[in-house]
Image 1 (tube, rainbow, N blue to C red):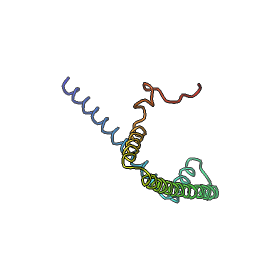
Image 2: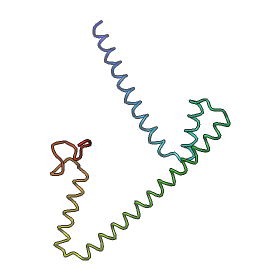
Image 3: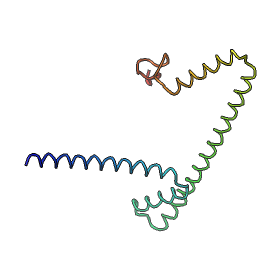
Image 4: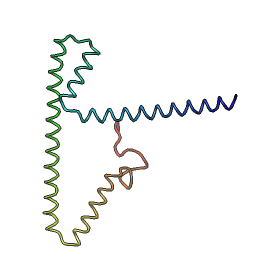
Length: 143
């Protein structure tokens, strides 16, 4: 009898763990999909959710849908504008790198590349090296 209870407990625990893992993966997948939705789809999803939760009338739903769609379209425009600005800045930095590289000697270029690599390492691994003090944040609020 004890062995049956132990097996049953293990089986239930295993099923619970698998359920939690499955739900976690499902939630991650849904979040990713919501980012991939178009502005119209996001607006429609939000309008429907608001209509259900707030029990909106048809007229209210139309008005809310328009406001939400306008906002979603504006957000989409801002995202595209930021992407374009980022790409322009990246291109400008690359052009600057070429110009500076043309000025430097081979030895200076090696030193410059080493400094860039160490900066990239520092930025990729904050908290390491002389810029960080024993796990404490670099800047503390309220001081």
